[in-house]
Length: 432
Image 1 (spheres, rainbow, N blue to C red):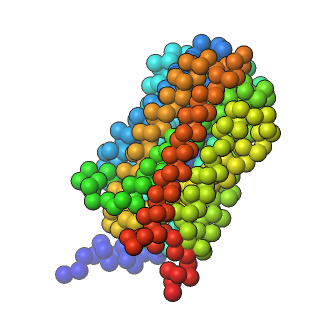
Image 2 (spheres, rainbow, N blue to C red; image 1 turned 30 degrees about the vertical axis):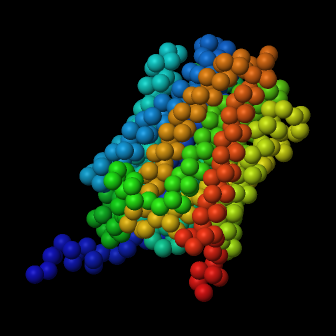
Image 3 (tube, rainbow, N blue to C red; image 1 turned 90 degrees about the vertical axis):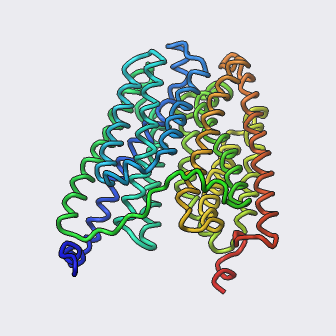
């Protein structure tokens, strides 16, 4: 006997194209606010030190506590989204992100700020999962990749906006609190985007046939023991790469101010080069990898480009444009090739677990190193009066770069052998 409700569902038309792209705009708006709130601390790191007597360890903790929350959520990730659906999940977790921004801004007490940043981690990671899952309901095939690319680009714009805020809103950056109030205002886009999406999906469910979202990425402990060697090498490359890049960005503006003697607004513009490069160049590197293959080789090249960057900034008077451009290239090249490579070496039904494991371990590394760099800066007395105090951190980043290059070389060696998974094969080879 047929199911009438199923027949009714099948007979409903698909949503109009314009409706789907408006949906994309508003779920991306929720992501925009989330990314801005996360990056709102970096531009005021020096103010937190001078006005609130925060140590660099305190500033690092504001980032590492986010990662701690992310780790906890990733272990249990997907449960809420599975049970309550994407529209409610996006609204709930977007609201938590907005509340987190408010909590962080209301008090100069480090404990209150840490609670706010922990809340941000609780809201932000499930929000990203819910948004990614929702896009799979609205877009299929090549449209899905394009939609996710636009979604990420809008999120990257928030990072650029945060880095440029000292220029665009210069009057607010005389105190520590006004920029955080700005983050509260910008963070309202989380709630706006989530609320509009809730309405649009509810409306669409009555009129249209929506696609089925893929399974939410989940952490499955028993699957850890069945991944192959190439996967774990990529995980090691991932954690070393992001443990250098993200902690560096956490202190980059303050470092540029103190070590290179530039104003906060210009330092913010230099810092924004990384998300800007990722937004613009990363898709081109992705296309290049699809065309020529050589993915492990490309990751080796990206790791080699990154290797000297931190020591150039710490020990030479070379124009900042040179190391920042090199870092931007590496920041675009390695992720653009690394994340898609996982799909070549892990079977499709376990990709969710693979990406969750990879992200979880990445967050563990970032949590430890962003706090550790803060401790290193304090230990070495890094400040405007002692810019050489930042060099200990630059060496830590450089050592991570060395390990990244070694792991990329190990991956290429594994993939060019008889047990390779096709990472080095280009479009012509794979289609031939």
